[in-house]
Length: 266
Ligand SMILES: Nc1ncnc2c1ncn2[C@@H]1O[C@H](COP(=O)(O)OP(=O)(O)OP(=O)(O)O)[C@@H](O)[C@H]1O
Ligand SMILES: [Mg+2]
Image (cartoon, rainbow, N blue to C red; front, side, top):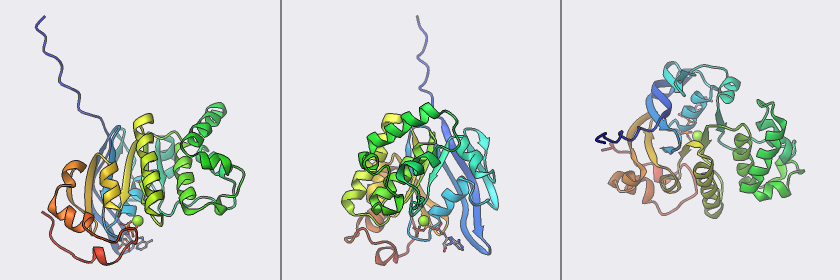
């Protein structure tokens, strides 16, 4: 038997953006963004405040229509589609600032995440599954979501996205406003969800340290353009990344001093 072993199949590209441009009126927020997310990986987009990270996610999930470019999810064009169709295809978005429904109970917030599904028994099972990842949500199931702490609301927002049984989760700055300890806890669970459920994740973050440790592949976004991309283990070794994203002393406060310095990426 002299048959050569087949080459390992390249991982499937689950999401591909090509030359995507989005704007708010006259303000161009992203300028020709191209990126790929492969099935099963955690990909990250790093960038300072205003770089365009949230705009990329909003454009993918259909909240904003792009001016140009293409967005393929599982081989289908989704640019400018209705957001609820995109959720039904298996793509869920955890927005910046969590945006839970404050006057609904934790449990009802989770059920809102499953609104596209008709399989009630499976929904009940998935609720137990998310309670397994975040037991505090089970304890608080009957409480109004508005009464939860910031960290618990982030847990709820991630859980609500999971309730739609997504193949891909878009996660917008889960560290926002959280203590380093809570940020670490949430990142650990995000990695577990990826490893245990095989859920693909596209994470955008200002917290480069956490993101580069959690993710497999990373893109650096500056002024609406991707200026660098590589495997995260390699990005962590690059001087520019060390200096501008990992070298800062004060962590956890967004948007000031550490982002002021500008330079050309190499
Ligand atoms: N609703 C809006 N109307 C007008 N301009 C906007 C709007 N939202 C964002 N922008 C602008 O678009 C650009 C990109 O914003 P975006 O929110 O995508 O950045 P970001 O990388 O997510 O920043 P942050 O880390 O602060 O969340 C910024 O210049 C911002 O001022
Ligand atoms: Mg943002």
